[in-house]
Amino acid sequence: MIAANIDVAFIVQACGFDFNPARLDRYLVMADEGAIEPWIILTKTDLIPPGQLDAAIGQVRCAGRSARILPLSNVTHVGLHALRALLAPGRTYCLLGSSGVGKTTLVNRLLGSDALATKAVSDTGEGVHTTVRRQLLMLDHGAMLIDTPGMRELGLLGTGDSVDDVFAEIRDLALNCRFTDCTHTAEPGCAVLLAMKNGTLSAERYRSYIKLRNETEYHDLSYFEKRRADKSFGRLVKAAKKSMRDWARATA
Image 1 (tube, one colour):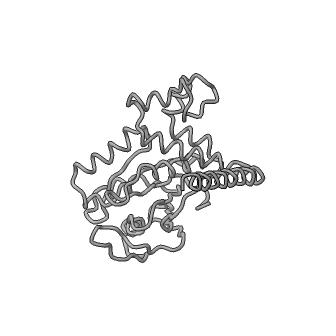
Image 2 (cartoon, one colour):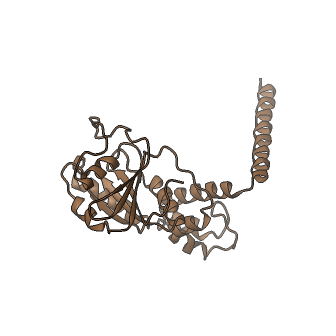
Image 3 (cartoon, one colour):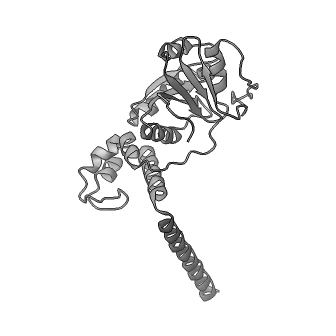
């Protein structure tokens, strides 16, 4: 739980060092689960050539992510006017992202002052973790903006339907699988695996889907089911270790 009654989530990633499409999927699933409109904000565009920015946007788009993208720079102010135009009076906006991507500096630009503390960036352009608490700020024209600390971990709980929504192209492919309960991992006649094999579905997108689906399914288990699953895995590990010891003794 980060905040309540959010209308729009600005998912902030810095071009270059922080750009991570798989982490982007995690934020998009979280936003979808909360019925929050997502925008992808790519910051620090002044640190990369235009071609690299175009490649990053293309990487987001070709994977089927439909959230709108806004590149900007806190240094050159490119994109800031477009961001201000998005902020409507009476609506609540939240900035989400890792430490050092420029969220707090962006808030200061929107406020028109250095009201919030920031620190100098490194030689690579990576910022320093500074914000340690969430803050709700009222902008001059009545929009509300929440600044948050950098996210170190972002777990998913009860987001099965949202995973399918964010990965809509995989959900649609699954309709053509041979088995209705296909896990898209090893079954014959799996349309998802076939799409990955023929190149219409990227391996990176597939891996992100499987990871988030497995994570949310695990978190959806009851406490006792989790204990049972953990014990079963523990027994499997012990059996594997015993087999390796027996093999080592037999071949010594």
